[in-house]
Structure formats: C-alpha cells, structure tokens
Length: 58
Image 1 (cartoon, rainbow, N blue to C red):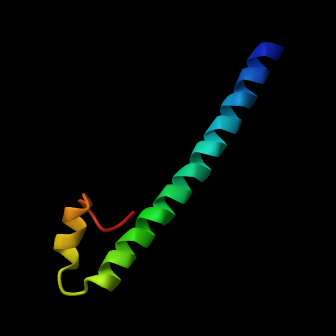
Image 2: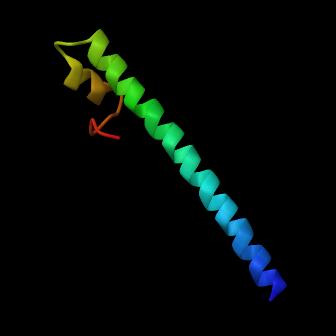
C-alpha cells in the first residue's frame, strides 16, 4: 500500500511540473505572437504563418 501512495505522490509532482511548464510555454508563445504583430502590423498574419503559427491564441 505504501508503494502505491509513493507512486501517486510522484505522479502528482510530475503533473504539477508539467502544468507549470505548459504555462511558461504558452506565455512565451503569446509573447512571440504579440511581438510579431507589433513589428509587422500590416503583414502580421503572413509573418505568423512564416514562423509556423497556425493560430493566434495560445
């Protein structure tokens, strides 16, 4: 029973770390989208596609 509890605790820790990492990645992607829009206001959609973005919201 103790091993099951230990495994569940480790899994919870890993999931928590994954969620934090995902938040950081999404924040970085949003920053890149905003930066491209600011630098290329007239051709922002085309520039986003050049950089591989298929959607604007992250």
